[in-house]
Length: 120
Image 1 (cartoon, rainbow, N blue to C red):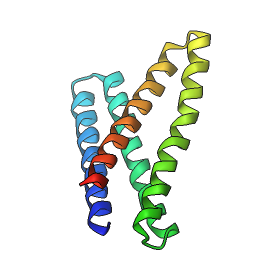
Image 2: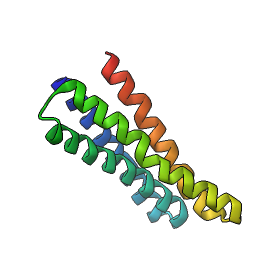
Image 3: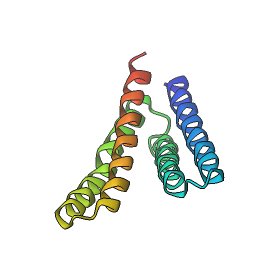
Image 4: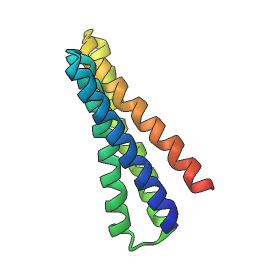
């Protein structure tokens, strides 16, 4: 599992760096809104990298417990984003809807990739 958590850390860090670079490029092109959205994506990858590290500490390196911890957080954390999205939708707040959609999409991408890594 150590190599699998290492692989997941590498993926999360690489995606974080990629989105931060894209944000910088967009900002340099005076595309501030798009840059902001890329920064949000980067932040989600950074958050889940931190969650994975917390799981490693909390679970004392037990591979199954780390996977369960991370999977549970991948459900719990986005639940508040879903609720925020729904509330924004009810109020016609398209900006908040967009931000929450980006966060939810990033979390789904992370979940798919984590599943792939752990199945290998």
